[in-house]
Image 1: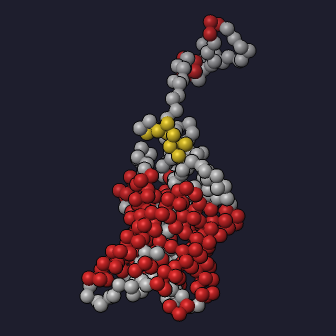
Image 2: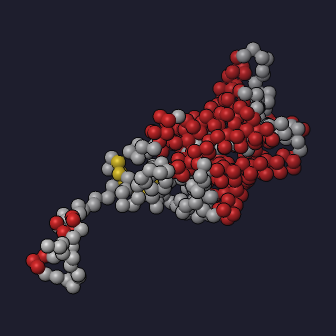
Image 3: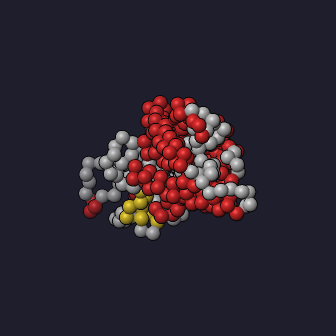
Length: 336
């Protein structure tokens, strides 16, 4: 743990590329599906897996692994809608890849599974344990609460930012314990779609609820959190209710991405109690400079060297004047 913390606090560390961030989200969603469904639809399995994923990939992508969380972050102003769309796409693709892995295990373990039988897909009505209205309300309420908690836990003003992965993992385990016995869902569209196409026609027809409703609940949470508690930073361009295209910025958009920035400061990666990098000390690496206002890397600005200080300025003894001229300022001379 100490080695990992030391690496994440290095201000010279190379920031992840967009491809690396998307790869982390897709791989994380696949692992979440495989271990969550492979654990027998158990809330603890989902929670522990999410905690491990946040610790592993949170510093790279922010650690969403859930389209609902990406939508909530975008609505709250922490992630651009462009990035939220890209995140959601790779999360669903990763979830389906994890679902295929679960299917292959089911087909080869000798358990008598027939292709087309329900394979961990959520359901309601005649196919589930709760009717349509009950499933809709339950999914909406739980999704709103969960994403609201995620936004609150990853708030930059939190004094317990480094505990965010554990807190979110426990919250996700709670979601599993509430929903898995009722609908088989975990308010994650990527998980809901992971095996639905292998689980028969009824599962496909019911999938809309487990994709649409969590997203609606997440959007509601993204609106409510800034209204109730205020914003922890200026909104990312192209986020919130501003649907105009803005510069891509995933730096603010996630679980541990938020957690890292909270712990290390908006201007750099200094730990609390250590020197932080301010606008007078820009973060420059490999010809790129971090712009804290736009929350993105820009070409490094060439700064003119400061003129050499006069002997008086170096010793703090007075004002330097050219050729004996004065400009009306009081000059302080050293005692003779």
